[in-house]
Length: 116
Image (cartoon, rainbow, N blue to C red; front, side, top):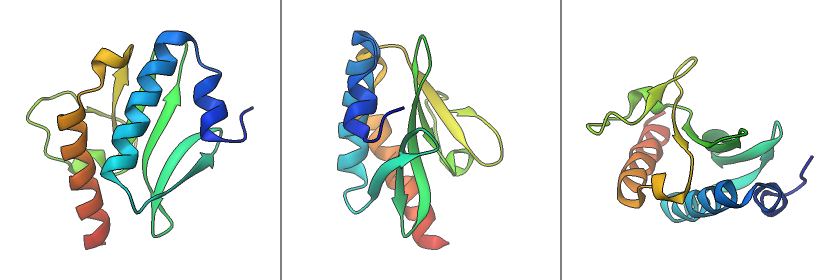
């Protein structure tokens, strides 16, 4: 089990490693004030102690998830609803990382946290 986000991403297979690294850069840029750390075995970004975004690797893709993702306006239809209020998108390679779209989702996620 990885102790750091760098170790977590570094241990992934090549295509997933590139997808996770690119998604991480987008998340870091979109949530510059967030604290990022390993939580429950995968990378999570927190604002004021509340989880906002995550990356979680599976065998064929990396999930980019948002805790309040079901409240995010997503005209692209790419966010898939998950449990509770979460929503996510599966990244099979770095080509699935849509920097502009994800930046908008992160902006909305940050605004949702500021409203709470």
